[in-house]
Length: 218
Image (cartoon, rainbow, N blue to C red; front, side, top):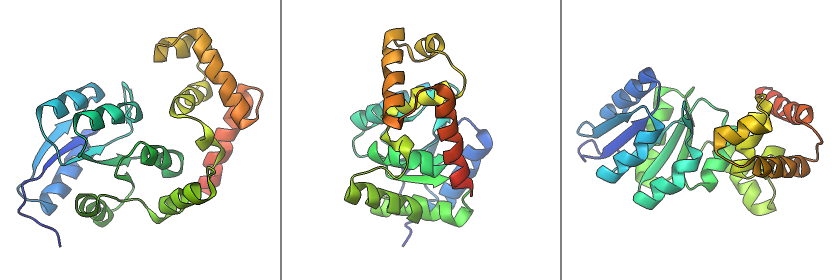
């Protein structure tokens, strides 16, 4: 049963104000006395958590400053018991497993209806987890069969980050500047990506991303 009287503390971290306001409305409907902090900048999330004990962080994936995957360890270091629900417009098949392995508590699509959003929030608050049946099956497959459910999941988080930039048309020099890495390091990562995916060039990498997205769309 949903407890409407506990004064839980939430953060909605999303750079789209309409999304954040909608989440606040839904949270208030579930927990009328909730304290809710709205954050729209990636750089402000960690600082906010240093100041206030938070029960649930509802977190988008992408901000203008970068992706949130890299800050999950910092968040957990500051508040080990915080619950994190990723709320994103990105394809769950591409990102949910990565965030699961980063120890978030749930992953929810922004295309979800109000009732599903409410269920996800209450499941994470009450039971500590919320993932769609599709992602639960992928998690079980990866644990039982010890293999990723798609080729891109073979890549480490940093490799995946660099692969996305390569697909966007970034060269080694641009990636070096974007991620503050040595060009030689970028080259090493690029070679690892090609080796793991058994490809030889960026056009092949683009085709893998395209094929993957088409498979999930179909």
